[in-house]
Length: 203
Image (tube, rainbow, N blue to C red; front, side, top):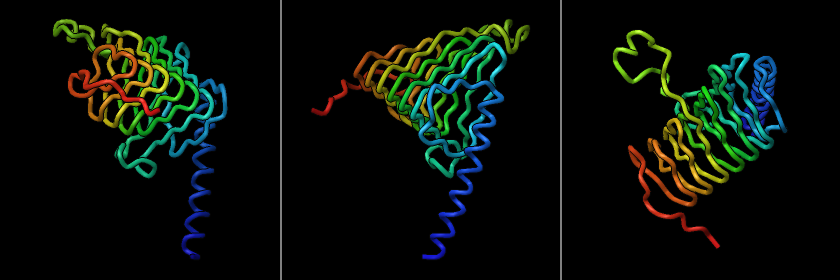
């Protein structure tokens, strides 16, 4: 009983410390807070230049580190903007140990759930052609906006590639690579992800 109480005290102290660190990071990196996050556990990594922007809605839950979601291994949650990139996260969103990188825009609408160790990139980062990679190694990669619509669920270890829109209430199976648009209310899985069936909404 005493050990449980001691553990609880130390846990609360750790959460308080992490909360202070995150608030400091969000402030110095210019994260726009439209509301109060519900629950942030672990330290979130933010990389944003002066031209990029990151916006968090209200009631957002973020897990960052294996102590808080073992499915995501030991990865932290990372938000990174490059060039004029924008990351916009809506209300009641849950994200675990995942990475979001934007050169143009990544929009995550309300009530979206993103499982452990997902990667969301709106850019190829590097050129495709060999000669272009030799000349412009880290420049010239194509970029297109990503939109994850209201109520979608992205399974653990999935990758969402540039230009993709994931429809309302759709589900992406664990370990999928999504390279094209997913309509509303469908389950997609695989590499590359394909439609498995419609979501059967509970009544």
